[in-house]
Length: 248
Image (cartoon, rainbow, N blue to C red; front, top):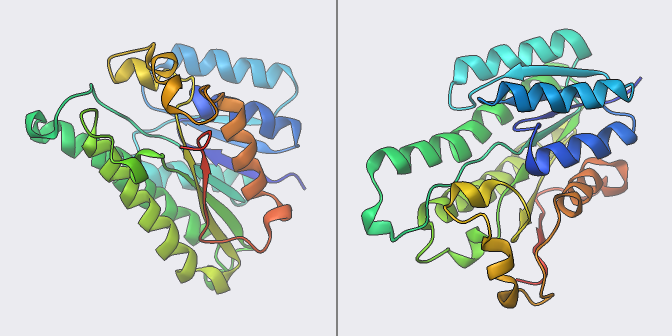
């Protein structure tokens, strides 16, 4: 039976690239999106036209009850989710931390941290042998910002991704004997639309000089790393955080 993968924020950027590659590996998909319905439907139509089984759910991961409902719907269709990729995340315009509003900080943490926790809670309840599940994998999408701190850009975003790193390590140890593996990837500067949200769509090329490999990464390069962590080839890997950052 085909494995089922749930990708939050799965219709754009890294999530969209991951979903395309996952289909090639035979996964059935549950993809969530937050607001851009037209973009989400176009992406899902392309996947379905290739023969993929895809469930699309509009979801704000900040809403715990909505997250629970989404996982129930996915479980009803697929039996259980085998792989969760906590990919949904946001950033805000670059600036100094002492200028950030409370609402900005709360929104970033609610999405990047609380959302990942809520989704992981639901995934554990489906996957864990403790609850009668057959096991599974959780992959969190962090950021190299958690190591670098992003001074002068978005310290709040970096701090939220630091929390994702801690979530990865702690949860991995908590469920290691329940047949669940938990890992993370830390992308560096990648060509995605998130840079538009930070206020500069051209940011990747402007910062190429700061990358040891002297080029930004492609979403597919991050997606392949996630797929490896989700695969049986990584069967003895848990609590790991893989930098996909060109050497940063």
